[in-house]
Length: 141
Image (cartoon, rainbow, N blue to C red; front, side, top):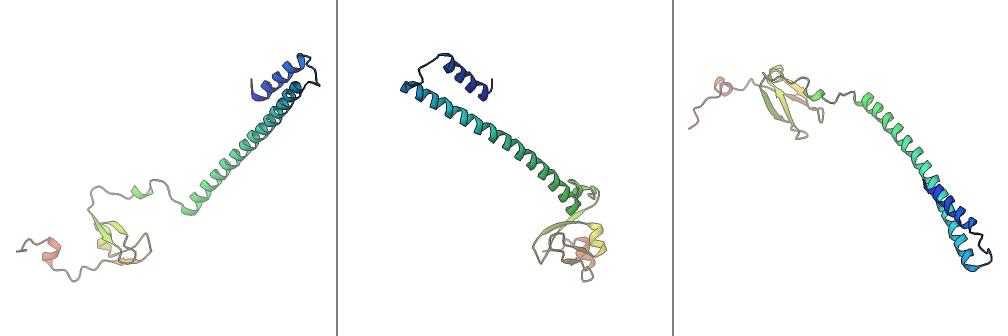
């Protein structure tokens, strides 16, 4: 039994009692039942509006998801598609934005990469390094 049925049941009970409509107690009782009917109507209207609003929010969420997919064109696990477990990775810090980027040895050999955060071109120049620097000399005393 929902709230509307309960209020109607109470209205039926009071009507069935054949109470004196001029009695002050009966007037109060009828006013309370009228109030319950009004509150029940308002609650029912609010429930219907809530259901409509909930459907609209779900539709907006779906539309937004489509827009995000089109705008960003990124799959959820794209960050890990190019990960090669056999390659060595190095951490590079962008001098412009300070973002830490993990780059593979292949990218270092290519010589540059654009920072994914700010777009700054990061160039890797190894021409000034000696063979000891590259091979990791242990002559530090």
